[in-house]
Amino acid sequence: MERSPKAGRWSELRSHFHGAAAFRSWSIEANDGVIATAGLLFGFAGAGASNRVLLFTAAAATIAGGLSVGGASWAEQAAERDAQLLHTEQERHDLATDPEGELEELTRHWEDRGLRPDTAAEVARQLTEHDALAAQLEWEYEFDEPMPASFPVSFALGAGLAYMAGAVVPLLITYFAPVDVEPRAILVAVVVALVLSSLVAARAGELTPRRMLARTLVVGVLTMVVSYLAGELLL
Figure 1: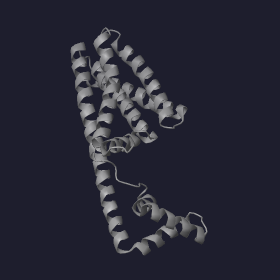
Figure 2: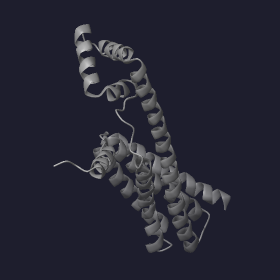
Figure 3: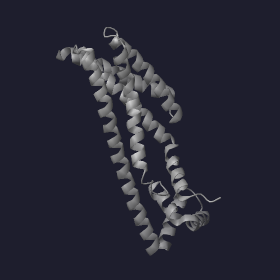
Figure 4: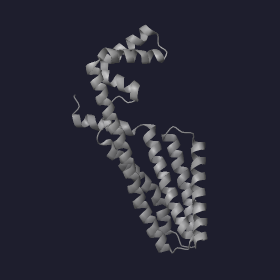
């Protein structure tokens, strides 16, 4: 049964999110949400802010941070897609005007990778017969086709939501914890959240758990300590 164009585009879009890079990126955004919001709260707490001020601060940081991260991610991915489209058009033009020259370039590429000249020529020929444009794009720019038009928006939504999911942790602690135990509760919750998100990021993103965890905890705890001290000094 032949797939519909819509199903094909959906399958293509999903493939972009199954790689380790997407999981790493979103896990890092979640960690950033935890650290940035908790650091801001610790700074206000050190300055003696009331629980109401802390709650509004956490809510504003969650919303503004998620929108900012989502917007930045969209701009980055949209720019990457524009570059991919430009490279694709250039390679399509080169293949149309000088197919033999492009085949020679592809052959030299495989020779540089260690294949014998006759083997490199055969590999280049077969790849060109299968999909000449994809073969050229893959060795020159490390992608075989431009990302779908919907990918920058989808990736941006994922990044923004990941950031907000992390920022919600200190926000909820601020809402539910009593004022006198709030800083300690935030600290404990942040450490637990960073440990869990770091382990998930390491597993999904093919990273070393110990190094990922150490980096995240050092940055997170240091950020909160510095923010708290800064709030006290400015009081």
